[in-house]
Structure formats: C-alpha cells, structure tokens
Length: 209
Image (tube, rainbow, N blue to C red; front, side):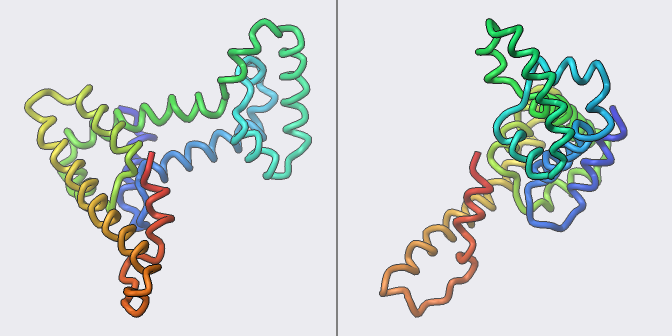
C-alpha cells in the first residue's frame, strides 16, 4: 500500500462536493503532472527523453498553452520537434501517445488498487463509499474491475453491491431528471416546477463515459 494514494483517496471520498471522487483524483493527478512538466521536471534529462518520445495529446497541449508559460512549452517543443525530425518512421506511434496521459493513467491505476485495499482494511471506508453521490460510469467500471481483480470471491459480492447500488441510485434519478427536462419544453408542462432537472444535461455529460 502506498500512503500518498490512500491519503488522496480518503480526502476525495470525505469531500462533500457532488462529484465522482475518482474524477476529483484524476484532476488532481493531472494538475500535478502539468505543474511538474512546466516547472522543475522540464529540464530533467529522463523526463525530457520521455516527453520527446511520447509528446502530448491535443487536450494537454491546449491546457499547457492556456497556462501562459510559453517559454517552458517552447523548450519542450524544441526538443520534441527535433526528435520527430529524426524519427519520422515512428510518427504513427507518436500520434497516439501522451506523456501526461501515461503518467496519470499509471497513478490512477495505483489509486484504484489502493481503494480496494482500503475497502478490505478499513471498515469506515465502506461507509465512505456508500455515502458517495455517484461514480461516473467510466470510473464505476474501473472500480468494479479493480475489485474483481484484487478481492477474493467471497468479498467481491459485498463490494459490488455497494458500488453498484450507489451508481444505480444516481443513474435512475438522473434519467428521471433528463426526462423531466425534456418535458419542460412541452407547453403542457411549462407551468410545472423544474424540480432537480435544470442542470440535468450538464450532470448527464459528467456522468457518461
């Protein structure tokens, strides 16, 4: 068990903000990597070798550019362009890789493994799972898969019941809210209250994989 991950997990699961806890963790991991790559890590030779080989996806190029540190980004691009120029035969691979995505994915896999460890080792964590508002569908799938991989056959059903229960409760309420949102644009329902449907579209987009 790696303590840094369990601290991060507990903080996310104890936060009352109505967001998937793994989405919170993803954003934190992503931000950490972006701060490092545009800061001290940028000049580390082993990091520069990896960024030269992998490059970045469009999304992370855009985020780095939006942060305003154009010199750091230019220095990264300088050596990356030089690498591409001498490795044109590897262009297809470079088009599908991203240094930040790879780093975040590595750390997020550790997060899921440690979340399963907490489920086994800390009875309070079971209650933290049960108190979550929801897990987005992408992270729900990964949480369940990690449980199936790391829990024994006797413990997995209880884990699956809790995580799936949280997800289905939110799923059904969200589905009803989206349906009500649609009905509100029918003149027959224009005088009816919105209930929880005003932000149903935005919430559905965050929930879907």
